[in-house]
Length: 146
Image 1: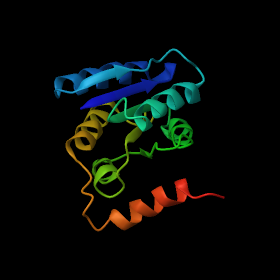
Image 2: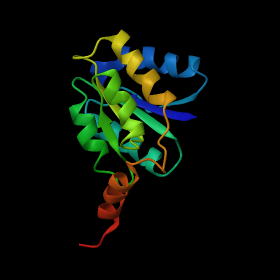
Image 3: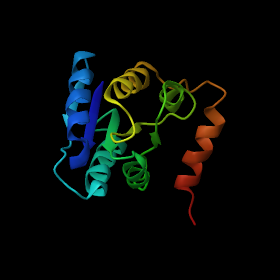
Image 4: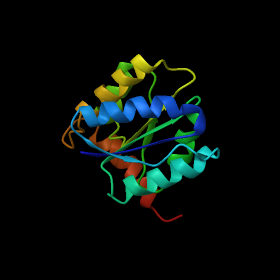
């Protein structure tokens, strides 16, 4: 799997550790940087790459995980979920088909962050699951004309 990763400067250390973890799990990792203090710039670039299919999934990190989540979700075809616990990391994929997760470096310790990434990457959405119609409604809304 090709996994995009990016963050703001406050989350550089988390990104470095999580990037190594992704690679150690056998995935290719595309680094979208950590230098831009405007977290939305990195989040949007990463979300565009995931939505375009250039990367299969994405991981975004900022202080709380909230800002990058909001920014990524502005990109059509990007479905970002902020994850704070193992169950959310699992359900981001299994129930919601999220192609991006976001994590807050100032509110999530690195050991938990590693567990969240592992859980997210090991799960795959089943398009025949009972969540299919729920996820489809989101896709339909995104593509409907206003």
